[in-house]
Structures are given as structure tokens and as C-alpha cells.
Length: 96
Image (cartoon, rainbow, N blue to C red; front, side):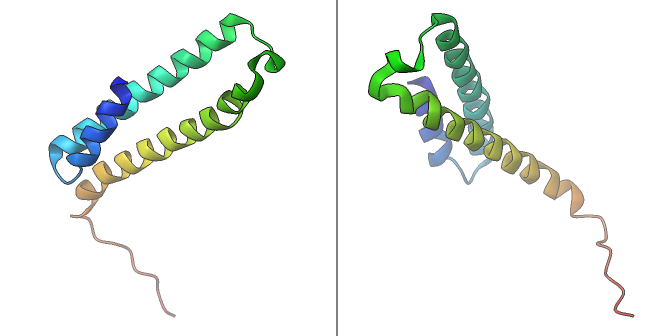
């Protein structure tokens, strides 16, 4: 529930510096929460057949959430590096 509130807060504040900070907090907390749930489920010792219809959660939703968090971290890191690189000249391809 906390991750959802942090995600909505980051969406509402996305155009400000506070929004970038909220996105970082959401990503770190959400990834930690996801990994914690993953390892707790592994320690429970349930087999795939015991999950019934909920089998699609660890098989489909969890990998998609991990990919989403990875993509979010990449976007956040690119946004931090771009302002630092604005003062450097860009190498142009030689048309020869």
C-alpha cells in the first residue's frame, strides 16, 4: 500500500525536483518490497500447483514489475546525467 501511495505521489509531482525524489523513493522502496515478497514466498515452500489460479502472479506479474523498476531506474539515471553533459561539445561525424 505504501508503494502505491509513493507511486501516485511521484506521478502527481513528476515535473518538479520533489517529483524526481519521490520517484527515486518509490523505486527503491517498491523494488525492496517486491524482492522481500519474492523471498518470503520462496521460504513458504509452496509448489506451483498449490497456488491455483494465483500462479500467474509470480509467473507473469512479478517479472514484469522487476522489468518496470529496472526501466525506471535507467530513466532516472539518464535524467541525472543529461544536465551534467550539456556543457560538453558533441562529437560530429565527419562527412568525408
